[in-house]
Image 1 (cartoon, rainbow, N blue to C red):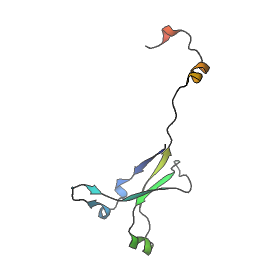
Image 2 (tube, one colour; image 1 turned 90 degrees about the horizontal axis):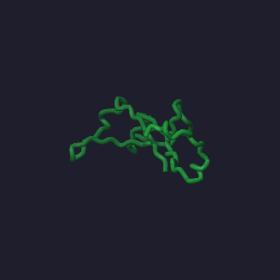
Image 3 (tube, one colour; image 1 turned 120 degrees about the horizontal axis):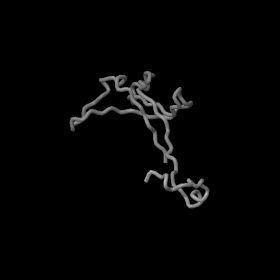
Length: 97
């Protein structure tokens, strides 16, 4: 399993793109897409405002508002074999518990 952690610049979101739903909450459609190359800070993804079909057909530029990177959780399970290979700590009286 992997995750994409993203950072969005709220100041770059055009206010006319934010829509209010019947429930009173505000929404905006965005796209998170893979980058061809990693960015300056190792970003693997980019975030931009979703465009309408008319905007895409007219060749309107994308409105980029953020970026992200893929995180893969590390497997921290300790096996009995791994415990056997660990270095002994020595004096148990020095343990903090």
